[in-house]
Image (cartoon, rainbow, N blue to C red; front, side, top):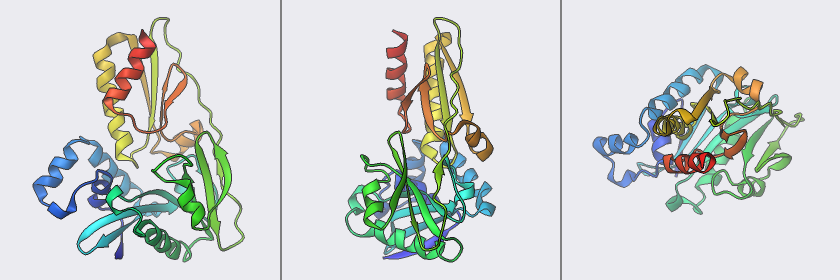
Length: 262
């Protein structure tokens, strides 16, 4: 296994789409990206716009085939509701199911730590105790300690210098007021994750289908100042309730909205 560092690569998104690199053709890549619509370009623009802030992508290869990726950035520029200093923040790590349990994640994390030791005093990450995506147990097994809990998320850190623990940003959510009989929907999304960008587009389509009874407010959190203002990076709120903390599908959005409207 070899690991290479990139400033931008479409293979990061293809990995998250569970793309079959064993049958890798340009037309196949185009077909895979179709399911994301414009979100592919939104993600690439986010990568380009954060290059000077230090975002980097590690991709693990078995031969010529990518088998996993890890994205990291200085915590001061993290696209997540955290704050801290002198830490490298792991934004995202993903290993497709067929490549799990073969040490890919461990090797990516080791490579990230080697890079982080050159510039910062530790690593930080938001992970989830009951999820296959960014599983908290994996990071605990590799020397991370939980410093805070928030909703269903854990904030963890691993340090080699005396570093102040990171913190979650306080949530400052304010409900959208709408006329009686209307359903309020708010989506927070960041271009860092193409699936959240796609969920934004899916929501707009569903809201259009359901007509004037639905009022949508979208908050793009690419600007960290906006995220700090709300204390939220990604999420869907319906009538003031946090309904989705993961990027929902069009079917899930439609079902949730219809349930509120009935």
